[in-house]
Length: 110
Image (cartoon, rainbow, N blue to C red; front, side):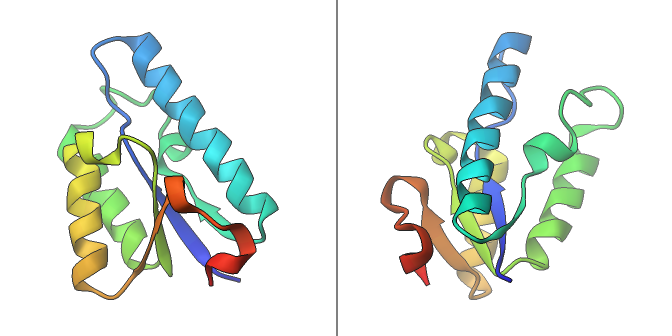
């Protein structure tokens, strides 16, 4: 089974914005699962953990998760997230398949 990492904004200026970003990621994760992929969605893995650890610890952890994935799935607005841009760059440099949410073709993607 192909393992896909979801990348996109998590942080926001408000808690409502964070919750909305988590929900967007969840909706895309559901779509990917239904399309037959295994999905790693860091938004859900650490949902509302803000303050438990410093941001860099979470970013280091999610980068480690990405290293084990076959593909990265870029949510709409991914380029507005500093962390997602770094994840994209890592994927590009290391031959991890890049899937853009706006161009997702489902099972035909592979």
